[in-house]
Image (cartoon, rainbow, N blue to C red; front, side):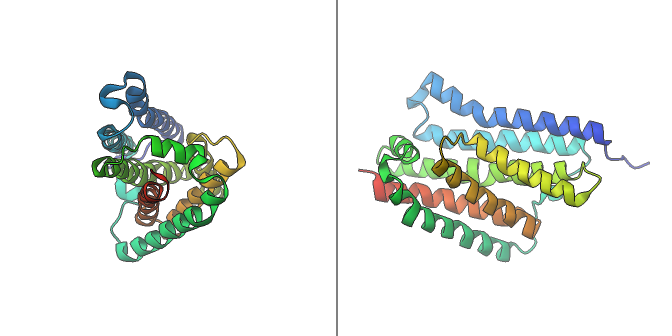
Length: 236
């Protein structure tokens, strides 16, 4: 007799626990390095360690969660189908947002004086290794892990708990966007715009392609571009 998928109540419990633990795992290394100041705190190689920890820990969490739900990673959109088209779509979207933000928005809203840019500059020490570690965090912890968790798992599992698929998709997508944005702690209109626009782009890419390739590439390319452009435009 084949194993049946869990009922709605059990699915909701597994989903809720996974989301809560997932957010804790994302925050944990930041708190650890920020509080202990080991090896310089949240900078240098610790940035890469943070990204790798988030990737391994969160992906393991999702693996066991999906196993409990009788699902696999393909269910949440991890597939190599049409990867070239999806990759190109993501590359275009990521570069376009980076060009818009660094070509117009950031220079017109304070440039190096902005809190986010100042924080990025503070974590850079001018070395190539530091730059690569920062990119590693942005691509691995951000581009890959955040998309698997916030887009693939969150939207797919939550929407399937609804009897009405269309309503479920809307609710799951909007909640995914809002929670992801809130997780970046925006404090003013500019910061809300900065995080909501790319979050909506990544969500639309996921919903349009029904796969994670495009949003992962878009998010990773943007994060990498943001680090490089901040370094070359504002670091001194």
